[in-house]
Image (cartoon, rainbow, N blue to C red; front, side, top):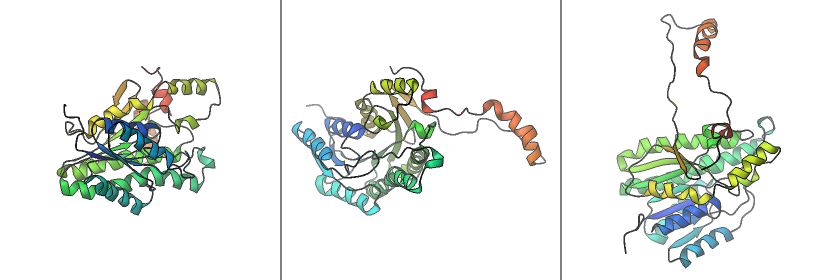
Length: 304
């Protein structure tokens, strides 16, 4: 039997009970990895607990001849994240891959957003990604190998209405991933991000308020979560040396996303005053200013 791409690897996947995380778990198992399925089993806004989704995914993997275990810890709890990593090692003997996928939504227009709305989303997405990554980093450093994939979003990379908390968390994850890639490259540890386009339980909470938003949701429904998994599997295989990058997957399209770099400069030997900024700097640069685009404005063609 030919060797599979992830034979001998152990993957910890957070938020793996449903949606993208579930398809990641199935794909990683199919590629030969042993999988620790983490899922608190909460609602899309982070409330409640339900162990059934994680257990069902584990059974599906086991029934297909793979190897899986479940974990119900909360990624926003630093000690719980350490427990996940320890469980992976106890169950399977090692840890090679971390997929930071767990997330919740608390969408609300900014002037109505509460501190709880902000804190809860930041805690799961950004702090949760830090917690699990930090717990695994010590293991990866000792073995001089490891791969991280963090889920970001075009809501953070580009923008969206009513998602200040989510957008900030997802753009923060890009900075986290790049820092991990820089700090841990000497230990042969890779870190990348994926911004997915796919119909999932969380995306299903998007309000349909007019014909335009209805059409957008119908297009999203054609993009299945299973389309995201192949690039994650590839990035985590030993055949990939890619690190510090941000990809996006939209049905059958894969994009390499840009990273912030200077696009225009202006120099004045005597320095600047507020007045000369207004009369010289802004007029010279405004042709290069970005519009207030949302993700849907940039990715405005039908999925292919």
